[in-house]
Image (cartoon, rainbow over all chains, first blue to last red; front, side, top):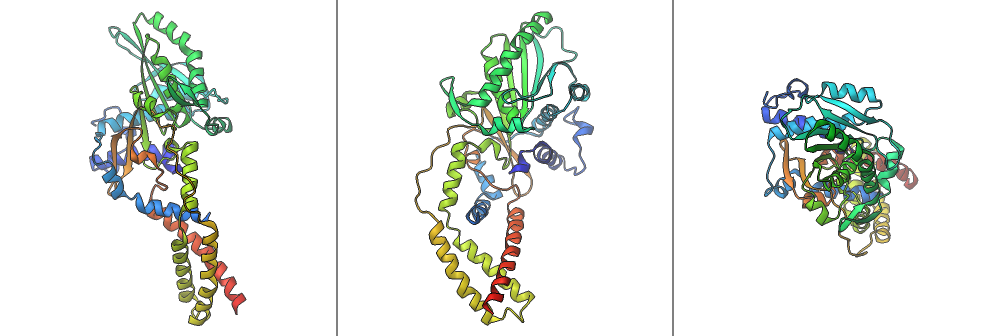
Length: 39
Length: 364
């Protein structure tokens, strides 16, 4: 409940997991490729 | 307290990943590019929590879309949240709009928490709104309309394209400010809120098409209102927790027998059950209320289009849902149902084991 509301443990983690799942890359990080969403 | 924790377990059982998948079956999904875009906006929401103006400026420099800081207030007062205004760099000279960003800080200090808790409702645009968030939103509009209009005049463009971003209370304030700025013909407004509290009545929330509210799985804040809490308490008071308590006693007794079978033999266990079972029955008779009162329909909802992300059993899914959607209407209590329930049961089990051990000594 609380964790899901926080930025780091909630929203950021969810976005990261979703993109990793979509790309099939468990090591994906936003820092390296957020400039180009399709990178 | 016992009934509350057992009620959470029941809710965990009911709102499992399969239930979530079915509940979202008829809602359109979101694609991965949108998620990347949301993450980019989330960095702005995060930046609004910075303690100093220099940190905000530095954060805007390295953001995916660099911005120039125009105004920043890094301290919050009740009804006056910290926020910043920035202009997008390298804007096209042929574009008719001036792109401006406003980040609004959410709950960080005691002063912010007070604003969160004081949740009176008042009339707003033919509906209702959370009064303190409304006041905070209006404060930002009154404070910055003149500045933004001056920037527009200096830019020579025809409209301000204002994007407001916030998290938690900041999302609520950004939403109200967005609705207020939208009434001004010089503004084009878009609001992006993460974990925005329920703050508008049904019709207003549904009509707020310039607002997108992002809700992460079981985030409690968008579902929380005075009525929602009252309904939860009524549900807990009516909840029949006896079966759960009896099961926990069974677990405790089994464990005692397994660990110290020479003390907790069948005769001792039978004595324990003779003592505990009537106590539980009696306690349940006194504490479980039946048919207290009808539940009240919540008055406030998160605003605009909602995107709900949820754990679907094999990963994460995200869907567009209406702000009044079934998944947002009730609180699903834990982010990882079985893990959290288990940790709770273990804790309670250990406490019961300790109590039963003392009880057994008394019996003997």
